[in-house]
Length: 114
Image (tube, rainbow, N blue to C red; front, side, top):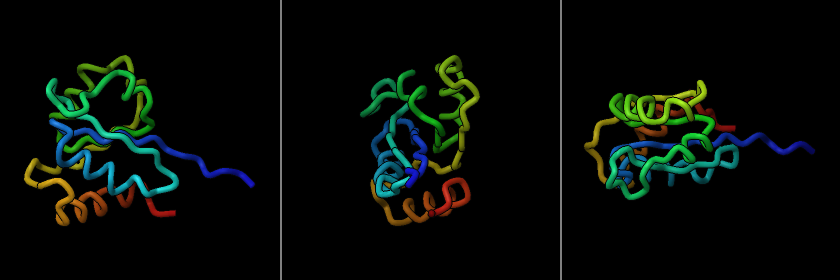
């Protein structure tokens, strides 16, 4: 019996306090995904590193500015990795039901339920 392939997904926001940790928790229950989160700011709870970028198969950023920062700082680690921008503004609390609904809806086509 073959084991299903697992995709490493890195969720990125600014501070890694609200949006990306919410996404990490929401998708942590998926058996086909291994998830982590990080922030682009130097004072983020879990700052983004080249190691995290290298680990990820797919990088999901909350806003275009995050995509730009990842591409600028970690260009050599990207190696043509898939990057998804969700365009979710910093208007939500951690585990906000509206944020969870938005994350689930916007990522449904990228990570369909198996």
